[in-house]
Amino acid sequence: MTTDNIPYTDEPVNSASSELAGGWGELMQPRYLVSTITLCLGVALFAFNEFFISTALPTAVEELGGASLLSWAFTLYLVFAIIGGLVAANLKRRFGARNTLLAAATVFIAGTVLATTAVDMKEVLAGRLLQGAGEGVVAALCYALIPELFPSRLVPKVFGAEAIVWAMAAFSGPLVAGGLTEHFSWRAAFFVSIPAAAIFIVLVLAIVPRGVSGAGQVSPIPFGRLVAAGAGILMISLSGIAGGTMPMSALLIGAAVVLVTVVLFDRRSPNPILPSAAFTIRKALGTGLWVILLMPLSQAAGSVFLVYSLQHLWKLGPTAAGALSAVMAISWSLSAIGVASVRSLAMRNRIMLTGPVLLLAGLALVVLAIGADIFWLILPGQAMIGAGFGVSWGTLSQLMMDVSTDDERDRTSAMLPTLQSAGYAIGAAVFGLVANLMGFGGTASVETMRQAMLVVFVSGCVIAAVAVTLGFRTVRLARAEAAN
Image (cartoon, rainbow, N blue to C red; front, side):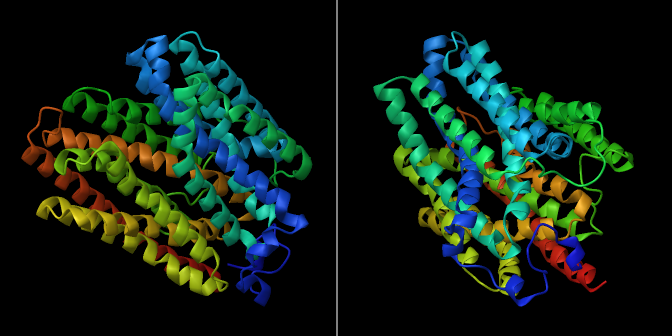
């Protein structure tokens, strides 16, 4: 890796100033403060909206009817958020970052208004579709703009600031949305995102120059591949509500075939939506993107089943179970802030390698807790899982940007939040199928449920072990590429 492969910074990558991270106070200086607030607000739109909607939506269903459409409110949002993330780099090249962000935020506001004023669930679904499309682009471009708006020494601090936003959303989001829903209306919880998006638009107008766009010739939007990718993600999401082992299996197999085909066609296309090295094991970018996908995929075992397991295996109430589940988010945020405070880039890269290892160890503790009925192991397990993400996510994301070529950096940056969402979606579907195969269900005995959860979390450990292997390979490949 040469300094030519690290654009958008005001110092060469091999310099002493690049090696040492800037201080937190530098983000608060006038030069970077508004940029920091803008990108964090873009992340906050996604994070808080997720918690607001998930908390208020059941009440909306009670008023509007259409309970059978409840899962579609999440499915459509996810599918179109991923499509938005995939097309974000192309839109940035075509229209510039400023215009694309303004248009995407406007689409998000339109979707929020539609969902807030809905008179039936169909209008809520239409609003969620627009929210997903807009927020998918916003989240992807907020990642893509990090190396353009900040020098490399401050990138770890930006990721640390975004971790703080996620922590705030995890704790205050459900509380605020629950209070608004209970004391006012579910529509009030939906509406909160509108003024936040309006502020985001004002900040974009203030900080993002009209000319901030990717280099190179603008290519047509590959609608065929985007539709196919969206169909594959939709099949994965639908598998979770298919209602039987055979339909779930068929949908997952079909989704795998569709998505692999999309990747293969994209590699041969002169107008790709993915980086050329995406998902190859011969390049640091390829193996690193696998880690970005596999870590949330493995952790989805806990996202889907941990609270349920705590309530049914150990008879915890919803509040206690939710609090234990939130330990992961706390640990993620605290460890991310800690790593962002490490000034040495070399040290952060070494710490990054422990991330997938901590994730694997945390999942293993959860397996031991379930298998041996040792409840207290859940707490350190959750803390280790969160720390695994916290110590690696920001540094790994920065590394992916660094090893990309100039022409592909936008596509790589935009893929980071997109792959994270895809990982959780795939994991939820895969572990749902595994649980069903093991007899998991509302009428299952405690012992059957325990065995099903053991297999689910052991499967998560296997996936995390692959992420560990690919994480070490990513660092070795990055060093080799830097030496050439």
